[in-house]
Image (tube, rainbow, N blue to C red):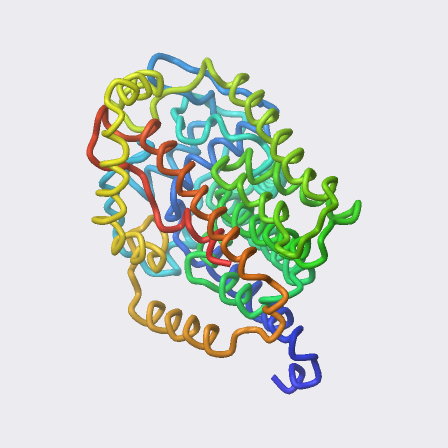
Length: 415
């Protein structure tokens, strides 16, 4: 810590993250039991499919997926007892750490293959799986076990997320202490050390937010920042479209900037991101199946809402009223939402948040009150996108609550 005393105050959070973040992320990557982060086995199946250069999956009846080595499913069965996507009950026996590392299911990539159902991830784009795809390539080349491929993908994901946060720290002109809080948040660390796309989403959103704050203060982006913002917007939109509004942070500076070209850039980037997303959805239209078994098709749900316009507002209000406490607790759960909430993590995080509010940032006055109101509007637009998307895709027909809302979805907006 004596090293930090020689670092300028505004840079200390950045270097503290570099000292703690990578270790924390890799620890989650290595010590979390296999397949114990949200939808992890589905992400493994999709990453393997993409690593085999199969960009678009296949639909068979009410199942969507592809032909994969059977040992991928065997490894999941050994750990979870089921490969059913979005299973409600997934009892996992407690095992010593040594025993977890002792499990070794050979991949046998040239052996028997079987159609595998992973409809929850089969439509995801390759953008969110680059670290995982590299892990699969290495695993096949060196004949690693399924569990080792999973851990290798997690470690690569942790390194990638670390790099995204590091760039966000270097970009953000104010609020680095707040970014430190977000980067070391329990759910952030858990997601960074997982095999899914959440590390990319949270880290990418942090960098995109930092670019938006810089534009709000400086009034414009340079060419490099425009390119970066475009790539990040495309990446997070293809991974989860509900985070598209973040590019809009740069739309409003609150300092009377009249350069309409600078104001138009976020709009143009957003429009192109929507076009790319629409093209990707079109390519996958024939393999889509309902997110939850027994749920209606999106078309049927939309038709029902058109004829019953008050159903969704009621479900929205009831869901966030009754689930507010659950969503908060989920931020402190780990693995497949089956470990926690951990009391120490909750108390430590709340204490860190109070310290963050107490110390603040003396440079925060560069952000006008009108821009802060705009930032709140951007976050509200996220809820306005997430909620109907989940209601249409995952809820029962005319249901009184929105199914599938999870606390981790809100982490990218904490900053």
